[in-house]
Image (cartoon, rainbow, N blue to C red; front, side, top):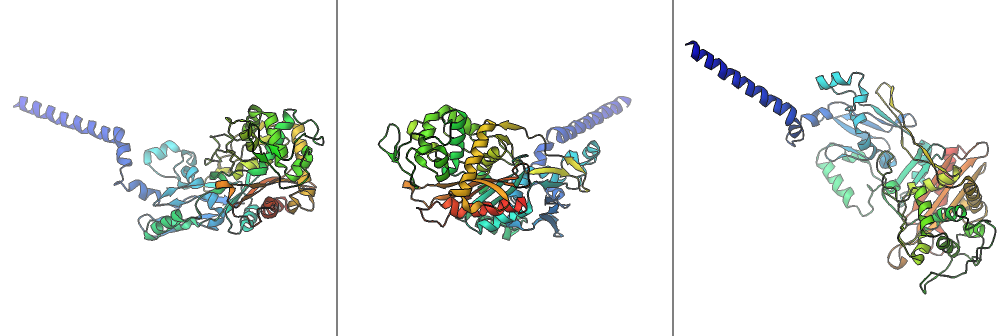
Length: 485
């Protein structure tokens, strides 16, 4: 009898061991499979059982959470949604997250271990910390001025503080209200379909995800390359540039919108945006040095994040001399985001040093205690300080007596560069209007803001320099807001 009892005990022990092995397999090996199974709604329900942390601008939240009383309890809400959509993105129960809502999701949702003073205890109890807050670098008045200036026209504005790299404004137009995507009902699905099929592309973040031919604003880069390489030693000396200029190896002749560009000095050519002078300067500098200067400004950088990713701006390194001439005036394959062109202006304003742009000042727990700061944002020397000083003079001349006079601000020194970028088959599209600039209040020790503006549907005639007419006034209002003028 005892033998049967021993056999039964051994069999029970074997069954118990099998149960323990299976439980360990489920808990340790297959837990991720069950967690990721679409039929498992526990994680989703837990995610929306508490309010999401907020995104702050100027110390005030521009987001919120609404208690719906449903199983997925809290939905995201946005204040001035279209104004801040390029920064916040959306947090949808159906379509996930985008932009800052995505990049900072761990903090906002409360899953970041840094939010808990006892993260190991939270792992044991599976307790979720209250959502933390994300404090942005945005300047509220600058953001509002940019949005108001675009007035629904297609385009974008980016503004940076040159000394730090803090992003002060990031606006795209047309925009949308992220609140329309927050829930999970039929209205959300309808809004998603409508927004994604809208030919105006309101969900496209033109400030960081759309690249444009930068047109004549790229002449800042070409001028920096020519001065740094010693191709131009005296900005007031003639440049031996014919008007028109025949592109090397072709019969194509490049002309100018302005008069007096033949053999013009760098100062005159910059002031009146002479294509012929800068096309020839680009060829004289050469592909290697032009590409190196563009790269120093940030072109061809595929790793830029602010903290969400930024589409890389491009300068083609594999071009012949004719293509290089066109690339040097911001045409051919040269493409740039508005944020990239704000970085160009910031490097000039910063005496040739460029700080990587960033959007998050710090993250905090719900009570306001700082969890993490902005991190290290090292500066790189883009050009010699003497070159930056020359460029600041040239850009100041553009605003004082050139094509950018509508960006002038009483009580401040303003430097700028207009641009009109052609595009479309046979350049048939309405030219994009560009303006890049920086401003320094008379009482300040250094420039306080660098701005880039692009307007896709500029109202100026093709024969006019629309960067000065359409984009410069927007940049002026943004700079005035930052400087408090």
